[in-house]
Image 1 (cartoon, rainbow, N blue to C red):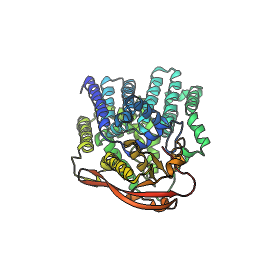
Image 2 (cartoon, rainbow, N blue to C red):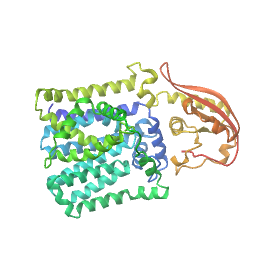
Image 3 (tube, helix red, strand yellow):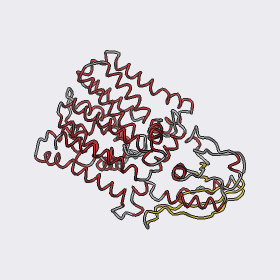
Length: 477
């Protein structure tokens, strides 16, 4: 494939993401982050704040729609793709490799999903691509000012997701192991870049200090040592085989092993190694979520493209030739399944459970129940059940617990709690026994099934709550 065709295919893939992102319903997490965007802050419980601002940008332009929520993140895949393309060109001095790297990057299911979905990965990936580009320019030009640009990229990456710390570790590995890069350690420039990153990250740091280190406790609390097992390593590697596609991942793995100090490809390899070693260590005792390595995919795509352009055997030539078609086929199948459910997987379909198919119909039925019961608001007790009805209906929703998820959201006015409320809970997370303790009466009034076609995906139970006991509680996100 020529460079021009590869770049044209990349443009088509990004446009396709925009269209599909406007059609598919939101996942619960996306609707949850949309709630964040309604009350902008410099920190939140689960993650740093970048995704809230990205969502607010899109919804200001296109309203509170799936397209509006996802627009900003998908738009960011444009500069991310450009940065991958230019980084590959700088590191390999080959236009064909650069275009192929950009195409591989966009063909992976990881990038297709994580730049379309409105999650913290959407701003994290372009920040990682920018960090790699700045270091590539530094290596090429020798201009110290690129350290400051890298610091800006790192700071923005940290405001998107804390995994950007691992890119800093990768940059340090490059400095220590590459003889030509090592000289920078004797200059102030890497440290000035690090200071600039810390300055940009400081608002979130101060927010955490003001909120009992909430996000840090949640994220870094996952770092623990349990019983040793190989199960999670198999899961981790299997997930990456799907998310990168088998042949692209194989090519990237070969590139990772073959990269030598002093070569251009040693830079993206060095950025990957610290994260990879940590994920393998973490997987010895706990699950590594499939999306966690998403910020490594700019470097991974460059390594894969370089190996595809330099096949050393017939097997490698076949691998290189099949990498893009196989990835495209896998991506097409996932899109078809998400849009049309072409495989009859029923309730076991992970895409059906993840995306909010059937939720708009649930919200309509909930509105009818609220009207017939004369209820003033909907009461919930988990963030998923809070976020989906809040996005897909005009109903006032109060989450009775976990107020730490919405630090800047308002408490409900006492007048809203004087009348009856409807408590909504998915059957598997029904906390009606705990909710009942706060009311004089709590009675079941119905059930609503979340459907995809004729398949029941989930069942929601609805209770009428009367006579609030005690003080006003909960938040209205």
